[in-house]
Length: 331
Length: 134
Image (cartoon, rainbow over all chains, first blue to last red; front, side, top):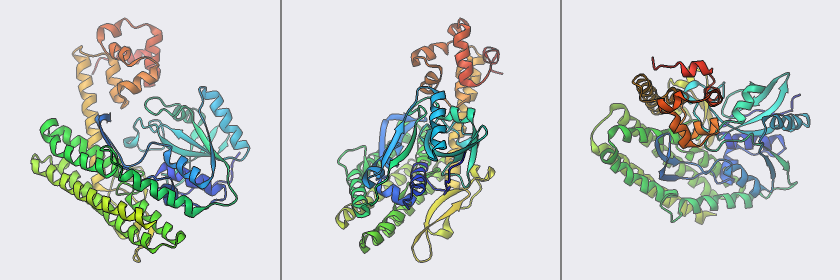
């Protein structure tokens, strides 16, 4: 059995699955549009929580938030089901495929056989679509891959029932109700407002305030943690910012693409200008990554290097604060 | 980022013939997408993480050789797990798993519990118990 599903590669797995599933259901929505309406742009720094032996830094909200918010704002109902038994999880998936429903799955990355070894970590919030089954292999559309791929029954069970933080518990999801008419203007405005409020939130661990908090920490790292640990922290930060999925510059470029599309739909030229502005800010994030990588490559011991990086981050925070204030006023 | 600036560096992705999608602007400033084989700053960051993991594996090996830790620690590091992840895979509390990392406690574990660890590491019980840190 095989559904009539078309695979499109995307930068980020969650937007990609959402965009691909909605396209199958007759809604022509791009990855940046899902990202923007779902308020995907975010910044989070919480040093008490450690991920991979480094403080938690995230450029995106919790897994699942983007698709859920986007769906709600577009008036689409998404059904999500978790399972305790792998057998039942497989039967439910096969029933969906029989009914011609390509289905989104939350999976763990560690046992994804088609991923390069270096990328196989215990990260449990990856997303992919199963669009069919031939004999005993499932046909897989993983949005971060160029082409479709396959997994055996056993391989798919392993990734659906990966364990650890955010374990997927076999979760599958698919849109069940699509409205005949979508109010794009309203959905876009809501998405933008939400992002502006998040980024300008008066909370030290979220948005531009969190960037400033992080800049302060970066200055202290070499003294309090030692150069080796400080460099490990920086490397982790750059991975969160640039690794598979962000489309570059910690999602700022995807957001620029979203604003450009939004400018046309809302007939608002100011959004086009703001798209250019966030693109330039994205370039500064890329420069930051280049400079940070030089630090941990050369193992430079100069305290000044960390101060320079912190200053760069503060500069970006100032620009983003101004940017989101303008964006809030523009809609 | 301009489309012609999308980096095409050698990376762990390009080794496996994987390319990732990037968003960039064309000559008129309009957004479009392009594929990237990799970017050096990212490759360096990833290498840094892989090296950290390899150091931890090496450390675990030494600890088992010198009798400071049980084989569980080595296989945990080898599979890039932390205590929480391993505890979830074997279905036990974290403190209990940490106790099993002591060689004296590990020696007394029954077959059923050893099997849980072996399953989590996708090896046989013999491979687990016979590991001496070589």
